[in-house]
Amino acid sequence: MKPIAVLGAGIAGLTAAFDLRRRGLPVIVFEAGKTVGGMASSFQDAEGFTYDFGAHFVSNRLAQAMGAAEICRTVGHYGEAVWLGGKSYGYPFGLLRSPHFAASALAARLRSHPADNAADWFRQTYGEALAQEVAIPIAEAWSGARAEELSPSVGEKMRAGILKTLYLKAASSLTGRAVCNGYSHEMPESAGVYHVYPGGGISRLLEPTLRRVSDIVQLESPVEAILVENERVTGVRVKGQDIVVSAAISTAPVNVLPRLIKGSDTLSPMAEFRYRPMIFVNLRFTGRNLLPDTMLWVPDRSQAFFRLTEAPFSMPWLAPEGKTQITFDIGCQVGDEFWTMPEDKLAAICLDGICRIFPNLRQKYLGFGGTLKTPVAYPVYMAKYEEQRRRFARATGIDGLYSVGRNGEFGHLLMEDVYWRTLRRMRDVASYVGAPAASEHESALPQGLTPALG
Image 1 (spheres, rainbow, N blue to C red):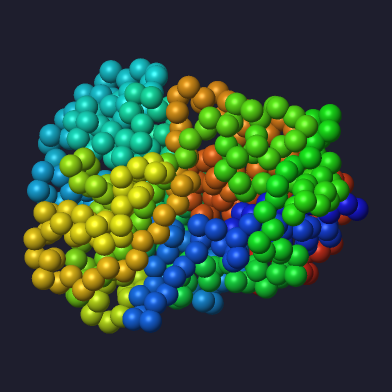
Image 2 (image 1 turned 90 degrees about the vertical axis):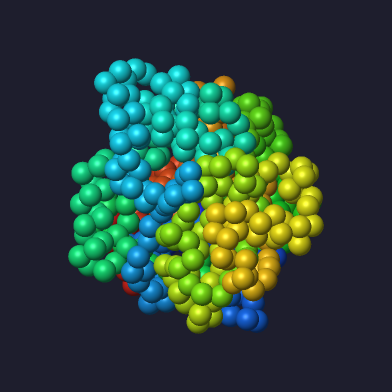
């Protein structure tokens, strides 16, 4: 059988490769970079600080499914807060206890109508006050677009029932574990599904899978073209060589696909799809639990950043004893003032900004901990291409071409949903190429993975 080409060796690409291999199918993974992981990358320095490429969330269910449970530690607490008007509000109940926001939200419920855009969705779901003061400013900061230009689908991933949230919050208090709430839409959440994290950072989550497919991963091998004939994938071009394949699985950003595909213009409209570039600035401080909670949302648009994350608040092993690290999320555009700004100036802007909120942190400042940049941090759901996005979510329109992962699906997907959705899509791939029954290869699965595939 002709091999299946997988473009990219992040969590989606490696999961796809392993699942196809266990089904008895030949696979080749082409990774453009020098290492695997993609956005699931971790960095450690000589001083004992560990930081990842942005914020990630791992459940015990995902760690078990990926065979990484033994290297993960249980997270005892995780929470989010919003800084507004000089005060911290816990999310979501701290905001709901405010009469100002509660009355506005109730009034919105009484006059609900179909939302035309994200701004409408926020107003109808949260009320005028909370939408204008919190939801809309944050959505515009991470998307780089006006809320009126965004699809209502932006808000759909944020929907969580009050009763469910109350139940899971109570379960977290009773169990002493950070029970997951709203981090998977593909699988049910319960008191038994809680946050864990690898001791050495998020990249370690991929180690068990990588060990089983490392021999088929080709690093520094970017796919230059996906060859299509009669709307069907026939091959890929790598380093100038055409390789015949039975299917291609892409994790590349969807706006890159039109440039890669040779022989079809079916995906040409995808070229205009936008991703939000992001800069993550890490600053170090003495002390712990300096923020009100693990994550602090900052709707104040006079600030360069819109989110602060103190990972050691929940995962103390990510920083040396008595020290912590705070990550600042800055939305930008490639080539703009922030993207081209020297790192020391970015650090100074972030330090000045957080000291406007917490003045005592300046005397606790230990120094700059590094900056990470990505041009494709978040898909931007513009209303003008929502119909095309929904069509693409069902199928690429080219036989034998499948797109997986957050960038590949152009979806607001967290890590666990990337995993489950990739597995389900691989069933479609196996059916397309005529794979043997997966059950014939279950014995090759790492411990804990079999139930996940049921």
